[in-house]
Image 1 (cartoon, rainbow, N blue to C red):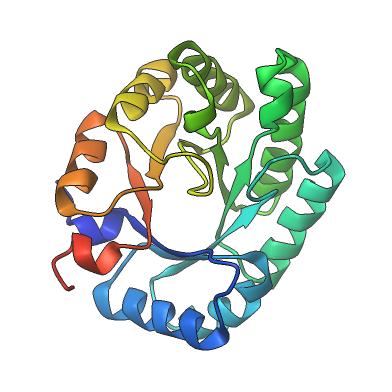
Image 2 (cartoon, rainbow, N blue to C red; image 1 turned 90 degrees about the vertical axis):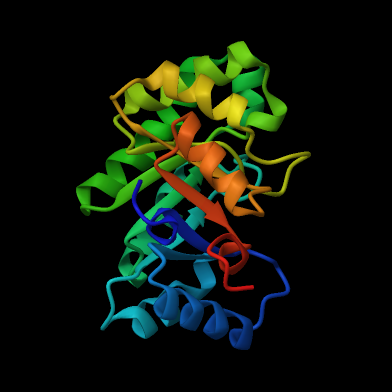
Length: 217
């Protein structure tokens, strides 16, 4: 297994995060060679500049945390983030339309953002918010995401009723096979949590407990 630090998107998405908080997370990511720093769109330009001379990626969220923005806004938000220096964008699918069975609308929404990101050579992950879905819905949503050509399907925003579960990750991995990768996020607080997600099929982890996971806290 690759070292745990290279699975981690070191995450700070709290609304009350200050520039001092953001700078601290960036320093932690550089010092510990985490894969990326995941911050809200407002901070992308600042973080990109701080990470410019490093191997750490800049990542952000789109349509976050509810997924209920219009497609045009999600596309505009993704384009802005990429212009500001985002290497990766994690978008939230339209959860309400998915729960209502309007799968075509869901796929078109995702596809528009995937196309915008890939046009600019930017990796894109799609959050399905597994806590709000049944097992069958998790599999269905994962398949829809894979069909759009997104790079990852992701479990959670971390803002819903619960986060990633190894059980859900296994369902997602089985649904997508080798077509795309799986990211687990939300509620990953220990090395044991992290390893269970990877064992279930996750190729990336989103967490704010990164230092604890690698034994630095």
